[in-house]
Length: 471
Image (cartoon, rainbow, N blue to C red; front, side, top):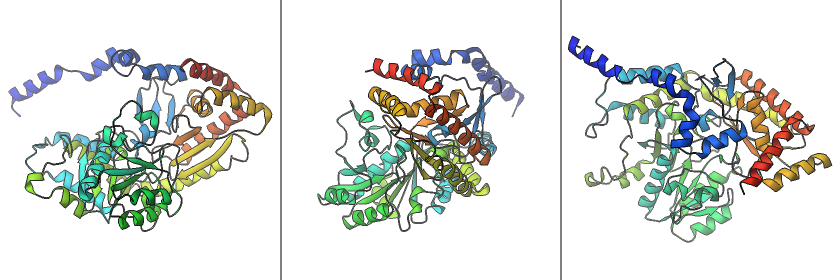
């Protein structure tokens, strides 16, 4: 680099100072969101006391300005699979930026997409090819398009309570009416109950079904299909010349204790698989649609169709480098084995509490995807309080647990879905015994308080007032 070039680069860098901008304006974060973005988000965060200010993050923890740590049991809805700011991913991104690759020319074949596809397919031995997009919903959109094209059929089946994304095609296979309301007309797709093979068979007999899309564990409610369902569904679909699409956007990349959630059932080999979230390393959005060779060859059947399905930012170097680094970390740090061991420790310790707390109805899930469900108590005093919450809005008790977990114990969790008395735990896959102990101890303290009429119920009254006011 010449002296003139160095001076020019220095001058250009001086035109924008990110650190200075954040130092000057970071305190306005909630005001900026209220004015320019989704104005209901800061309102909701203020209402439930989630309006924290986090200064930095590392691994499974956030830190505030005073250095207090907050345990992350949400992982950015599953995006932060290997934790926040993993050094291997950070180095890969620095390296790919420093390499100044000729990226996204659109008229060449860069090595990184091929290398990441090779790595992903090594974990998916029955699949052959990959399309890279930018998100989970894009991965689903691609699978829906491919299935419709190669079968020549218009209709996709999906399961009640499913969540596959919020773009129009993905929304058409979304099993929650709250997300769909007001966005019609959608695609002519049909819901079937999760696990109901008879309902699946009835729809397939109509002869217009291209595929069934299914989450191996549903994110909304953490619901698992009955044993044998996926294999039986696959056989029914193939018998009727339809495809099986596995949405592994949240369950994939080790979340359930196998690389994919469908691998818990022998013989299941989906025709198309969707992944995203954790593949990003928490940095660069990426989604991938994996499929069988014959599907891709039929979609891209000639040179005239070479761009029939594409994405402007798909296969970009930063996303590919992040994905390769994530898979390297998973292999070298034995992340899937950790998920199996830590997930079983967490689930079993929580399940042991069901006999202790009458409002703790169920603990379920696989690996580090765990649902904690609450239910109607038996004692008269607690029954009346439970009824008060349910009359105002179903799901308020779960929210009553989530809030003190954050405010008193500095643990971030989420209610699993609207109008659900379920908390979902999807922490970073790298947590261990220390984090299990901290969560179980905090959860026990909150449940003790709830069962003995403590401060949790004072917050419950606030939630009731808010729910009634929003009707």
